[in-house]
Amino acid sequence: MALGLALGVHPAAAAPPPPAEFGTSWHDPVTAAPPVSVPHTHSCQVTVAQTEFRDYTPYRATYTPPRGCGDHWSKVVLRLDGSVAGRQYDRLGYLHIGGVEVLRTSTPEPSPKGVAWHMEKDVTRYAPVLRSNQPVEMLIGNVVNATYTGVIKVKATLTFYAAGGRTPAARTPDRVLTLDGAHSEGAVYEGKLSTPRNTERILAEVYATGSGGGCEEFWYLAAPEQAPYSCKSQYGPHREVRVSVDGRLAGIAAPYPTVWTGGWSNPFLWYVIPGPRAFDVKPVEFDLTPFAGQLNDGKPHRISVSVAGVPKGQSGWDTPVNVLVWQDAKSAVVTGGLTGYREETPRHTTAYQAGTPHRVTADAEHTLTVAGYLKTSHGRVTTTVSRRVTDTSLHRWRDGENTDGLRARWNDDETVTVAGHGPATVSTTRREYRMEGVTTVNPDNRLRTVLTMGDRADMDTVRAGKRLGWSRLDDTYAGNASYVQNVPREQRHAKGVSRERYQLRGAGVCYDRSLVSVQGQLTEDRSGC
Image (cartoon, rainbow, N blue to C red):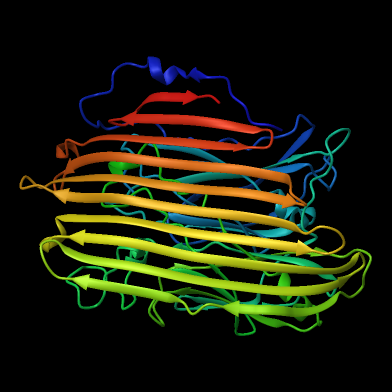
């Protein structure tokens, strides 16, 4: 279904003028991201979890597939509704079904009177897991006591849209696997993988997140050991997610610099409009198809995920792995092997310069190209995956860190070429993440944060000079908020303006929505294409 909206201003534009400063309640969190488009077919809904989180005890239940919608669906949508009131930090959470991570998320920080929020995610790719009874585990780790009173209430549902007529069943992986014996040590997650012997495509997805409450939450600000800064790392701010097969590097990627809803020392930036991806953490994806011939030998193979730049043995990253597998239905065994492997020596420099302000500049680049072939029922197929990851940043701060600023950019460019009978299919993805901001504290102890974030992705698929598909995504957030520190809540005199514009275009898709909030009130909600 195409996304298209007539130009319009939603009722928020006609709301009363915003207050002079934040009060004790504000608008519920809202994002400019589009809803999941769904077909106009019969649907069935299943409640996966409905609970309250007060501590670090996981919620456990059993998922049962729906009745009345078949077992090969056109779309499956996960919807999460939550509420929290009082005082509480932002909290990170996950939802596992059959051991597969289907959601990584975080929560808003509440007003005293409470907020409610909603998010949804297309989880059709996990359909193979959802066709049978499965254990459910969900956790949003929380602390409730006399000070932090916010109990997090959530309900997670799955809506299944039936296939039929002009609405075919979605094309999904044949299997979704997790790693056997998976365990974490520091910033390394490792386990064994056994793929079906007729596998012809493999995609690994990693929900990589820097943990809350520690310096790795703000990894992009880390300074070298010799610098007088509160968060240090011997590698500075450089981070890179890497996946290895049997000890050999198989994929590289740039992590997204997610900012949770208490981030940059200023929750007033995020009370209404969270930063990109804060409620729906997207996994980093790695195409491991060149290694399918190696993995198809019927033996378990060691898969490890690490975050380069994190000191050895140091925790602070969570990197669970799902492995999506497509099988050759007409072959019992698919054989193959690597045909090419080239890794450019990673380049990474970090320089510290003392002064007023102090400065840390960082620059990194890493390129990996892997090619492999498979003998399938439809001929010999060669897959070549080439990926180039770069990042640059300038971090400046003054003594005491009462002025602290960053300008950074990450690029992650990937090309996947699949060649067999006939012309090759070439898919390119160009990702760019941006962050520019500064936090200052004036003599009256008023903290101000000005911050801009960007999440861009351009994707194209071409065969024989003909474009088969394309999309352009640009999600931009900008905020400016201030408050008086270290005083009771009612004396903070907080002010803040936040904006988000989400633009998505592609074949049959046009979506453009802008939001503005002022002192916690949604003052503008425009959409159009």
